[in-house]
Image (tube, rainbow, N blue to C red; front, side, top):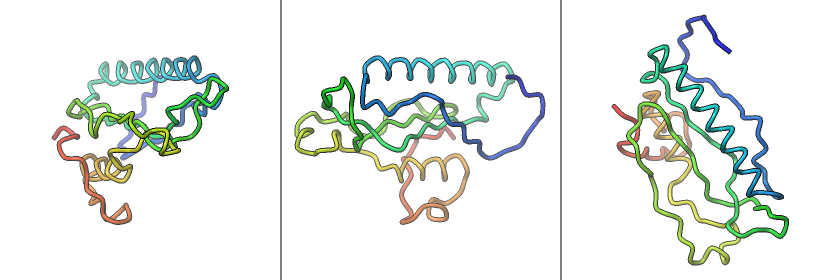
Length: 151
């Protein structure tokens, strides 16, 4: 849908309709969900590019939980600890955090252990994009991830 109104806004939250709670049928449901996300993000950035706004918009993904590494018997994955979050737009490309470690995953009970805290991810957005001290909006004044937001 095309909007012609010109809005100056700091942030917009959009929920995705896909059901990522894949306790059953994870392999095909996850593929379908990620393909839908890919199509949506590509269309969004094509529209931004056409309007010359790509350098003025940061897209940040989030979710409330990760998935376990081990299948649960229903071709699904249960709720787990670690997760992936994406920042797209005027950012420096790359990955933050360490590659997941397969050793010890079963003993952890929640799957992969996070290597970057959600608080650091949010602090990066607060300070690097909005220019707000993380301590003003997040408990404990977490440190942002250095060099992520292109400056």
